[in-house]
Length: 257
Image 1 (cartoon, helix red, strand yellow):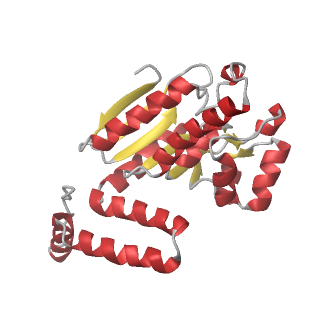
Image 2 (cartoon, rainbow, N blue to C red):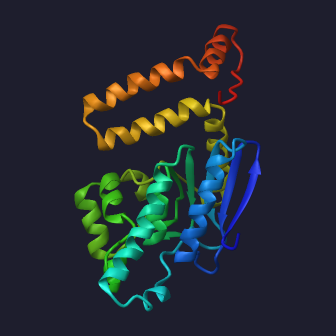
Image 3 (cartoon, rainbow, N blue to C red):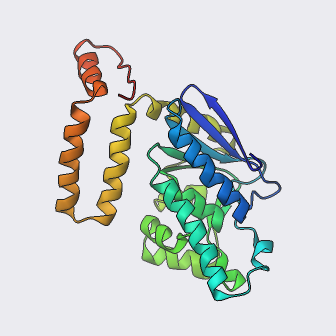
């Protein structure tokens, strides 16, 4: 791979975005990242993914130079749809994806982070959607996901002013789960990833599916889906192991079966 490095330790895959100096999201980057997600999805040895950026930034945004080659509304719309598809694949990914954000996550970089399931941030990180400063708007579903996390008013303020918020503010507004000093960020993220990795992949995958159902289905449809998945998970080998381990007062050893 040209833009991403993968290091697997135990069942946690650390994916490092490496496109200096700013880890800009180009079409080639998005294509490679989509293919990488496909590989990790099929890798039974990987249960949790940790995504972070190499160098000074998580990702400072889309590749603006690439925009100069876009000449029609149709081409621009297709560019947006391509990014949206990758972010949707990321959000729907059946294994937990944790973003460890330092430096800056701006524009497309924040859209990438918002596609992840959990965000840990450095206290001094900058997060924002400054596209209006360029006379354009977010195109990788940023308008939709930002409002979901921070609410209508704050999303409008962030986009209209183009001013980023800090990692600490991101936690206060619900955009991130936890803020820590930058030097502790990766260690904190790895600790969280390993805690999640101890759970059954079957039950984790079911919770991802159900949390998405809450966004797209009615309450009654979603709870019916919960009942169906509860039944399927309940008869798994992992469920039997979990119950037996509880009775025997020992840690469960889940095998994903």
